[in-house]
Amino acid sequence: MKQQFTIHAITDCTIKYGGYIEYSTDYGKTWCILDKLFLPANNEAQFRNAESKSDGRFVIKGYFNVYGHISTLAPSGTKTFRWMFYKKNVVDASKLILDYDELWLRAYYSMFSCCTSLKTAPELPATKLAEGCYEDMFFGCTKLSTAPKLPAATLANGCYLCMFKGCISLESAPELPAATLAYGCYAGMFYGCTRLTTAPSILPATELADGCYESMFWGCSSLRKAPELPATALADGCYQYMFVGCRSLTKAPELPATTLALFCYREMFYDCENLTTAPVLLAAKTKYNSYYEMFIGCKSLKKRPVMPKKAYLEALAMNFIPSELVK
Image (cartoon, rainbow, N blue to C red; front, side, top):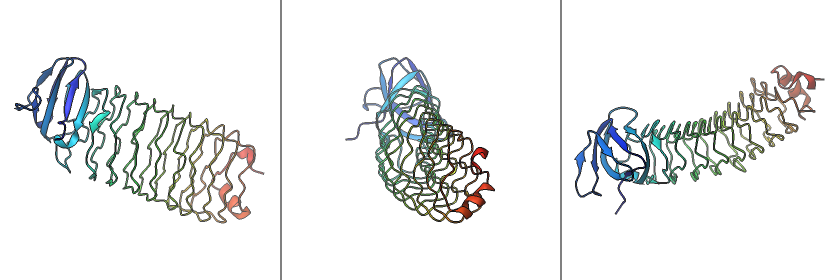
């Protein structure tokens, strides 16, 4: 039998809900419709049959943990989990079981957004994703230091969009094994994670999607090494802004593509002020603004990137490199 979704009070808590929900304080022996519940510290309550009317579902004052199977709270396809704990003082969600194998549109959108007390996240085992399913899920969780594993091999539009944006305590990113990408799937995923030192070792997809890595590591000022980027089939805006402000990055990854796309490298390494080594750029011809300001602000770069002469001359028109490297 599945363990019921449960809130455990760390401090005294008062609980309301933006919609219909039932609760039990005797482990399911009796159930009541929730109006307002006072839950003393070190006590807990179970919840079921949640039906939400608006964003910001739970209204909880006090600090608490959550655990149990999420599916015992509401059925598949529900909007109940969107904004579920927005700006609430949940501390430990490691034993919350997100037990749906297949997700749906924006299933967990902003679920823990701005939970500044959250230290541990639940596991995310789903392998069938959907558009925006994890979008903003941990946005602004400033105490979260470890990201859950993300095993899905096939992605959906915006599925990880801004997922960990502003998680300033996050130190390492999980491996991202997906080989089939989608529009904006990783866009802004680690935006502003200023303590992030370790990226995935490789982003293995060889065929990219529009905006798939856009702003992925923007502002990750502690990132020391970029992931391998083996893709040879690019897409519009696929790498734009990817490493903006990554000031600890000293070496750029290899970029083996020989055919470019619109805006594909735009501002990719903008303001990477300690970057000393640029990749060899093999494409013989540019696309519209494909190299726009790619290395602007890279003041430690001593040599201009190696690339075909015609492409270099075209790139210069896009303010490609610092002016001191133009010869």
